[in-house]
Length: 236
Image (tube, rainbow, N blue to C red; front, side, top):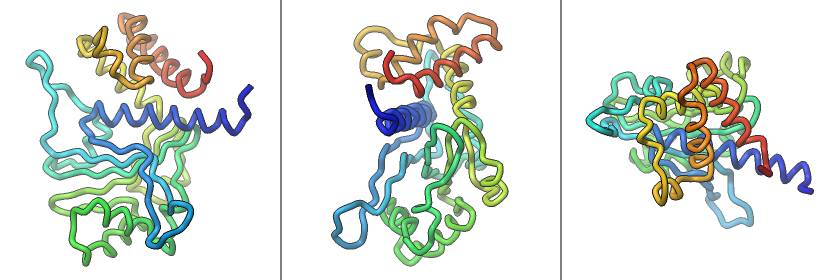
């Protein structure tokens, strides 16, 4: 029987997998579990971002002559639709939150990740990092960096402190997934292609075949249950 710590870790891993697939379906190239190393040699890493992702401004996927519509929540990050968007995402099973290593100026982790992203010269790093610490967002004419907190529940206190933070719930993710596969059922492949999907992709795809034909309210509930079950159920 796995211990509580092991169960919690597994739920966290599965929540991150759901978020990872959501960003991939929205045209982001992502790195899950991004390890940030310290400036000097030491035994442990400085911190970890659950997910770092980038989306280029003209990212489009067309299927059967129809362009797929990506999630408006993510498209609103850059209303101009002309900039490169970087995302730092923190994924929680329950309440949306941000980790201390990313919010504490003295630790200098924002500077490290901005340097590693490598889209600006070194003399701009400090000012960009300050904006991220203050607002969890920075933007220029060509680039946006947005911190996103993902979880089951929105954090009202966090929103008051950081109004530019984007929070996304698993319910919103489940609604996007439902709409994507109801509108493009041909995106639910079978055979070898389906087997290449991540575990959650296969789990959700198989479930969608059972509820996609239902009325929208019932299908929405089934979609959310599918996402929550995947995150919360260890042995199925």
